[in-house]
Image (cartoon, rainbow, N blue to C red; front, side):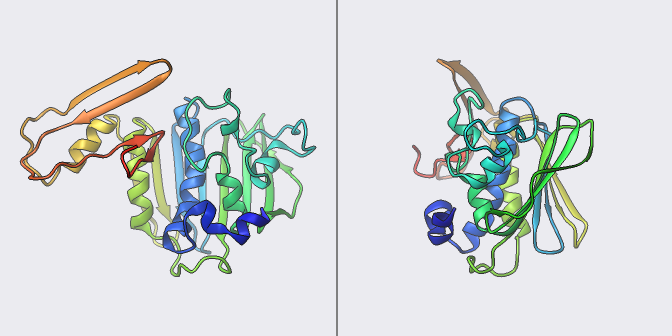
Length: 263
């Protein structure tokens, strides 16, 4: 965790606006991985008035049992130990995105404070961290019939150069993209201070994505060409539509991550 605080750009790209918002995407990616695995259908991102941000999902909830080798609850290990996420265990997620399993621990290390609330096993569990260090034990704070995880964090102002807090349009662009890529998943963006709310949910998936990209162009055919195939455990989806534009636009994604160089 000290290494992350010393060289943050190695993990999140930079300490400006892009890196600041990348923290959000890392937490959201964990919720989307639950959706990809078939356990989560609702993700809520809320910009809070105090400059923090909350990501809530209705997935299985981060495990709270004691970690077999670390001697701490699994949720604590996931948030404080690099490379301890479920993405390193080939049984937990067949498909996952994000920072190779170091994502949420990096978010914790680069936050002034972070609080996690896990709803699992009929209980609500809570723990608080400051600059990546646990300041409370994992405690039970109530009962519930629901499952899921809520992560609330405030980026560390001593690390980030970005001013002005979380930007609505920046977050909305990525959340809209994730909703297109994960058909049927409902992603809600809210802002406490203004009461603003926007819901992203596309049952047509990447077909709707293509329609969205072509909304200001004249398509040459009304129906989007779409096909999907699975082979050797790998699923590929392709959607396309010709338009009257002079240049072509191609987007490719692997596990929800935009492969900007086409790889």
